[in-house]
Length: 294
Image (cartoon, rainbow, N blue to C red):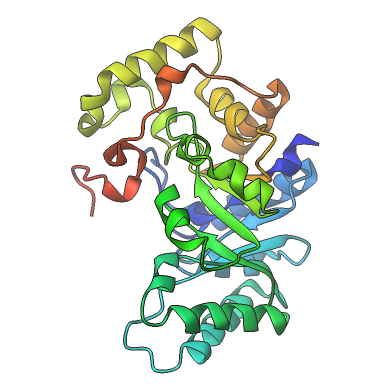
């Protein structure tokens, strides 16, 4: 069942999120409907984080005991005197908000801290939390393959989450998709829609992205020639990739979830090479500087 290749991203359930978001935080009633539909479709994994506003509390209020819940631990404060105690308190706080006894996986939200002065203690604490049964798996959430270059020779992980989409194919082009698969590391990809940018009509794209107009012309032209919708193209590219275990999709509404589930029926989509881009200013949303943004 292809829907089992999807994980439901829940940042929109806890805070307004995404360049294309026009509705703000998803209301709790709609969130409940989204989770119910996702579960009946065959999806079994939720992706959240302590940093996602009220997301963990919303999920706990709805009830997620029958889900595999993946959460992320925030950066450890630089002045932290007891890393183990701080990380345990953070994880137990997440468990209390989620109302679950343990996590399916715990990821570091700031994995490059492993190379800092507290790195050994952070990794040791991760392993201890796993040994204590508070999480089944441990891993990292990265922004790009350069973080994998820096970390993987020194630390072992069960799961890696990284961005991957039609525009940003760095996980594959750098060889890391194959390396992770060969190392039996579970691979979850996010940012299928590039925070919604790939779903926006040409007239809606923020002016800050006009410098890549030739790319957008190729993107719009390819969709027009193939008859694919942007959702079908994005989901078909990532979710059906044989080396990917889960593709994380976030939605603002039940209608969006239905559209994503429908797109799965098309199977794998192979876009032209000319749609790929490795410019950090485009593929890394943390670098975006949009007018009106906080």
